Image (tube, rainbow, N blue to C red; front, side, top):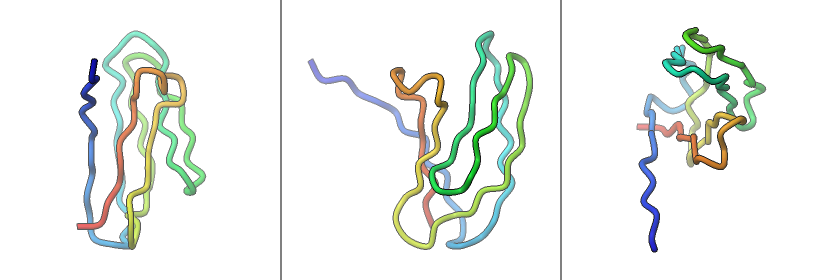
Length: 80
């Protein structure tokens, strides 16, 4: 059986720093962690978190919820 996964991809100008606001609409604790950017922010149920991320100049950068990796909660930042 093939499991299909929908991947969230956020794009922006290469090298630009952007503000990313994440809202936890669920009842469980979530997290936003960005590879190589020192971002590891917990988000309580019903709360929001705002982080500054840098769009990579080449290739994708992965962001994840460290608590829900088995459910494949992840996405990518990519240059336009």
